[in-house]
Length: 417
Image (cartoon, one colour):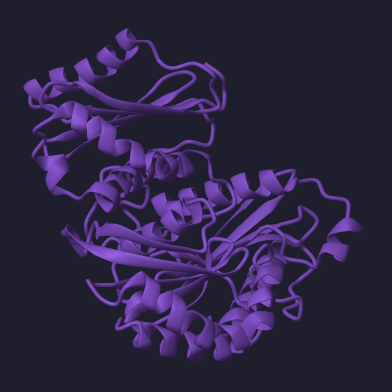
């Protein structure tokens, strides 16, 4: 298999019937004999009262997960950056995406396999997004990717009024698949539910308006809600989660133009910052190549590998391409969360795919760093935020802590993220 190949298999737990197979980086599907072998070894282990969760070979890693004793998901990855943490997150996201689109009941009580296969086709674009997406971090962090936009206070006020007029408490404004503003109750939904809703909207083809039935995997897995979306300008959507009323036509004809037409310029300005994730007026240290800031209270994140204005980037000789920065930041996040910052993020419970590296240490790490020939990385944790930075290799190691603390202050004090 190719070094970038990833295969995702979904099967019924009781009979092992394949429901679908999705892949990344390979032009061919797995042979049925391989699918049967991967599922068979997992079933054999279960019959021997052995929980088989993952296996690592010379050039690949395989992870198994069973959900509600009904659906088995298997992922096989040849990517050298794959880890048990990232692959388990992938499988959790995939199953939750299935629940989001077709509901939990149909996945637990499988009455007609062929009908289920047909229904699951509606999940393919969302699932493929988890396999191939490289410009977001929400799939790994389980937090919503956000942008800090100009005039956000005006946009927030308009969003609150629009959502209330649409008879809902749950609304958000998105630019390029990232959240610009959201209502208070939207942020109080389960973090995975919010992440999946945003990911779903970003995965759908552009449309002026939609009335999309969704289940919330954490909040309402068996009772559907209506997700109303409206394209305000190309690339910018407003979303409302509501019940049976109001009608899509009423909101589109009576509310969208009344609330949003006066704000066309601020809406377009959101697109100008969505690639960088924050305005050009926010200046960071010249040695920073990539940034991930997580608000642990609201489960939202700020992510960028283009932290400097474009003209500054074009004048700089870059040893790491943008894609390499993304891979580096994801790998560093995985390392830190699985080894150093995991204890108080899992409510004192040990998750099987978290490493027990820190056993025997009496302290909890709040900062850590790595150094290589092409880059350096630094992470900081406090009560409300996690910050991960990728630096140029020329940045002195002793100065990374000071730069990280100043960067954290810029976004938490000056920008109130």
